[in-house]
Amino acid sequence: MSTRSARLTRSWSPTLDEATEGQYTPEAISETDETPPLHAVNVAPRWNESKTTIWKVTATFWCAFVMGSNDAAYGAIIPYLEIYYQKSYTVVSLVFLSPFVGYTVSAILSNLVHQTFGRRGITIIAPICHVTAFAVISVHPPFPVLVIMYMLVGLGSGFHNAAWNVWIGNMANSHEVLGFFHGFYGIGATISPLVATSLIIKAGWEWYSYYYLMTGAAAIALIYSAGAFWDETGSKYQQENPTFPGRGGALSQTRLALTYKVTWICAVFLFLYGGIEVAIGGWIVVFMTNVRHGDPFESGMAETGFWLGITVGRFVLGFVSPRIGEKLSIAIYLLLAIALELIFWLVPEFIVSAVAVAFVGFFMGTIFPGVVIVATRLLPKNLHVAAIGFAAAFSMGGGAVFPFMIGAIAQAKGVTVLQPILLAMLAVSLGIWATIFRLPQQEASHHV
Image (cartoon, one colour):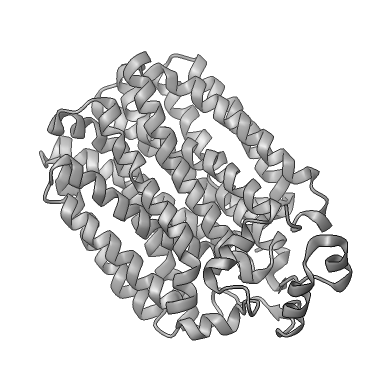
């Protein structure tokens, strides 16, 4: 494990000198004087410090598994949605876009849910959103209802993402544990296209039958995670994460988080990252079938290879990145992903494309956890849920918007547009991440 095993988690609060330099108003100074000191040093909890903590950690892993199982299934199911509902690429791509509504709502309400109901509330509300949506999808409703249900899926996933990235991000050895959390997302994402493709092609199931399994998995998440976090009430959360009196409560914390440069840098970066990840996973089956001329099962396995690459990368590189440094490692992984994406695009061989896209997944896998770690180090602890919830929702929003845009463009220009668009998105992501290096450490958390 990392040398950070015993590192301390420190929250940051403004000094009087910083306030007089224009970073804070006089009212803010008086308010902070009335609160307990936020710069106190606390020992970061370890994932295995008690049986209860292990239960909680494994519960978050299962929630991640459910999210991955849902998100990666789109790619395997989309060809059958087209046939079943008799819709074009553009219309069917609404199943990517509609969760963005849920993600947006979760970004606004996540901190409020934490302040009011604690993490217990997250473990009830988020899985109920998933159970309800998956159960309705499993009865193959009319297409407009299907779109609305995916909005509900986005709401549940948004709550999960904000809560568990922050909770784990403040642990000792957070990069490694976050790697496992996102790794379980990857396991779900790896298994689900394989399961969905096998059930549909080999076993003769209808596309919606897959959601019988998803309903059961979400029900397990509800029971398992609610039991684990039952003692994590709203009052307990408020004690651990005090807000500034007079600032208007939980929703104002979100507004305050948005005044920090690092919040916006991470949010925009993750917006592109989420778009790249889900666009590859969502459209690779169609690309490998239509452009690389693979059969449906082989093309489905190419998607499995991509998500397997992400999963292995999260488990393995989570131990490498802390030794390189999170900021630098993310830049290196992006450069390697760009090189592999060029191979994927320019070498028109099915096997080469399948291997290249698997390695793209491998190097991209640990980027999201790395961004979360960077954000938790640069932001005050009491803003973590609001800021990272906002950034995580942006990531999932990118995973909704860009696959939809690619579907709309593919309708007019063909699915070959996938590769140049992905390459451009990777290059822009690298440029955005470079701005993190240009922020002096002492200014990275300052207001914009």
